[in-house]
Length: 146
Picture 1 (tube, rainbow, N blue to C red):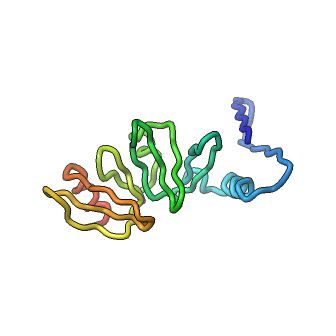
Picture 2 (tube, one colour):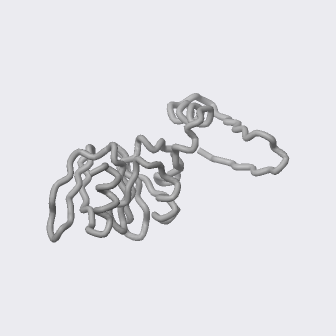
């Protein structure tokens, strides 16, 4: 899909025009997101040459791997060009950083358990696992009201 963005100071209200030969699920989802007030609760990601718009509620984890920020959902993996600290600034209170390289969605946690050397282990509902480092543990506990 080809995406064109035009920025103009003359436009009073943002608008989006979509030209397509068929109404797909992704186009329907994009229309729904653009028409709702939830646009601040979404993020653009890439998978290959495709661009997808994900709602925050769909995201399980952001993790830096091989110098790239990967975005994990229930069954998919995407990339995002922004560095992790910029992603963190755009997220809502459902997300918390658990290490230098990982941010998780608190609503997608399956379990938390003690790990080695004062760290905690986290498992998400989609099976992803990671460690909560000691540095970020107080913020994590605070986010969970512990």
